[in-house]
Amino acid sequence: MSTDKSILLCCFLLKYFMCCHGIIWDDLDLPPQHLPGLFNLIPHLKEECRHDASCNFKAHLNSSTCWSYQDGCHFTRSWSYSQPICNGDSRGWVTSKKEQLELFYKQADFGFVEEQRQQLRDFCHSDVKSGLVSRLECTDHLKFCRGQHIWLNLTSLATRSQPVRYHMDVLSSGDVQVSCFLSAVSLYHHFCDFVNLYMSQHVNASDVNAFSTDVQVLIWETYPYVSSFAAAWRAFTRHPVRTLADFAGKRLCFKLVMFPLLPRMIFGLYYNTPLVWGCERSGLFHAFNRHMLHRLRVPPSIALPVVRVTLLARHTQHRRILNQRQLVQAARSRTDIVFNVAEFEHGQDLVLQLRTIAATDVLVGMHGAGLTHLLFLPDWAAVFEV
Ligand SMILES: *[C@@H]1O[C@H](CO)[C@@H](O)[C@H](O)[C@H]1NC(C)=O
Ligand SMILES: *[C@@H]1O[C@H](CO)[C@@H](O)[C@H](O)[C@H]1NC(C)=O
Ligand SMILES: *[C@@H]1O[C@H](CO)[C@@H](O)[C@H](O)[C@H]1NC(C)=O
Image (cartoon, rainbow, N blue to C red; front, top):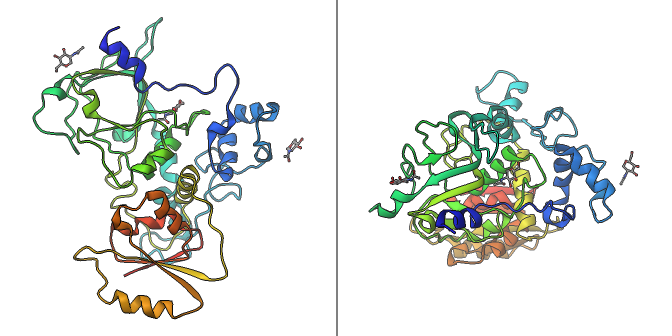
């Protein structure tokens, strides 16, 4: 067997769990409140569950809750998962409440996904009558692509002198091959940040495998992958995460491939996102919170009679609270709050960090990346940025 063939077999092969013995329902592994969304997106799945004795999700079959990017599920409908509100002033961004809501929905909610899904069109496909059909579908500006039977030629990577990170020139003209004619394509680096990866799954969602973890992740870098967030990959894949270095010098065939939305899209979510003022409750971010906590087995938050305050303590030169000791003392002398100091910089296990955050009512922290933890707060929580 040639190298090419063995790679073809081992990489990016999506094993369908919808096989001869029906669907293994537990493999869906979605938070219960997201099951109606999937069932309403894929109607035949609903029927299969209804008629399959082994499907334990029957209680979710009659719910009309749907992902707002679906037809007939506009966020103004009560059955839409997204229910954004805009009680605040838009500060001149728009002239009416309706526009404010629509804009927020497009910028920071599933409206973003909806737009991508509408833009998705055939970029090219091979029209061989027999054999493998290659195709590549992309959204405008190739923000998101997915393909079938696509070859990537990573031969020149093996002789490259500089390691690759944030590079846009990994593939040159001719390195992406399908049976159809393709002129130069630039597929940008895509170190996949988790919100964008989750959004991309929604852009891609069309069948029972939409959120499957039986996928291989390839990080578009040659550096070894080391991250304190590595555990978060468990929400996306049950296989080890690979980098370009694992395949340098080889040709890779992707049976099914997704090039997700970039973490740092210009005017995209959620890096330098332009965002209308006065709105809140993005269904997309809510769904991301539930999905991640569910997959990482962090128990859902429950409200307690006491208020749990968590201070994110950091020890970098510019993000240090000088009178932290006095602050903690004063806070701990109160009986109506439980005051917790979280020092996440000491390489604490990500899941333990998320457990702390998911059980926090008020999060206090310095301006900075550490506050990204707010993604995992309960719905009712408040953030106090110092
Ligand atoms: C859902 O609706 C069907 C048909 O209307 C009904 O037979 C079934 O009992 C309902 N199931 C649940 C769990 O409510
Ligand atoms: C892959 O790329 C290398 C180096 O650019 C080139 O020599 C080789 O012919 C390419 N292979 C195919 C099948 O196009
Ligand atoms: C994209 O959707 C297809 C089904 O249309 C699914 O099989 C595949 O797993 C999805 N890709 C990813 C990376 O989730």
